[in-house]
Length: 113
Length: 112
Image 1 (cartoon, rainbow over the protein chains, first blue to last red):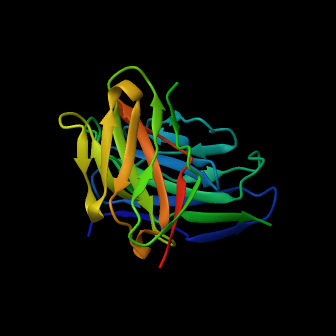
Image 2: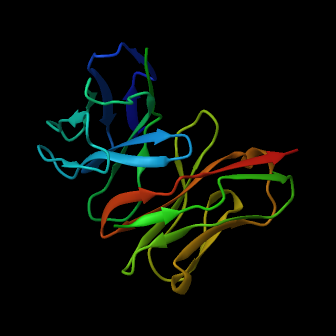
Image 3: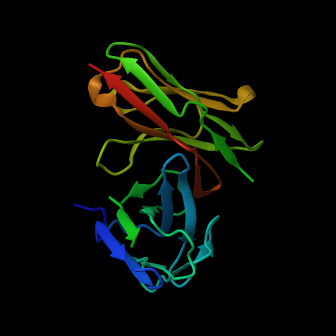
């Protein structure tokens, strides 16, 4: 079945460490997105990518970095510069140019200890 | 910049009650509108969407939403809720390219 796989489901990180969250899709979607979900704040866009080797900052990109070397993969690195990294992170993908909405992954819950 | 407002943060209903969740957006041009649902422990799923045509849109599980352009609104409705509708509901808007802007969500609790 086609879908989006995020791993790991739960992740613990020590303060000052970088950590990379994985997102893989086999839907042949062009566009991929990373959102952060916090209680009472909805989903806020971190980064998005419309095509391979290209990506743009979203509304809350500070302290995060991404790469898009393959169409299927869009990993997110949470760096030590992110002041409040504990959150639920959601990856999504969509077909470019057609407003079909997103397909979401099941998310990664990151906790900084 | 676009923004989406969901004024009801928490809603508590009894089974069989009717549901209406408000969603207002700020953008003067053509918009695509979505409602997503997140059941406890599950990923976000698309409930329904509006691009053009009939402003009354029917989605899955008996949900519907009405686009009222003059009010910049896209309220979600269900005539009779069930306990299984307990979830968090998100309204979202996109213009042109699909970058979605989400509202802050409404947590619905349906008591049996």
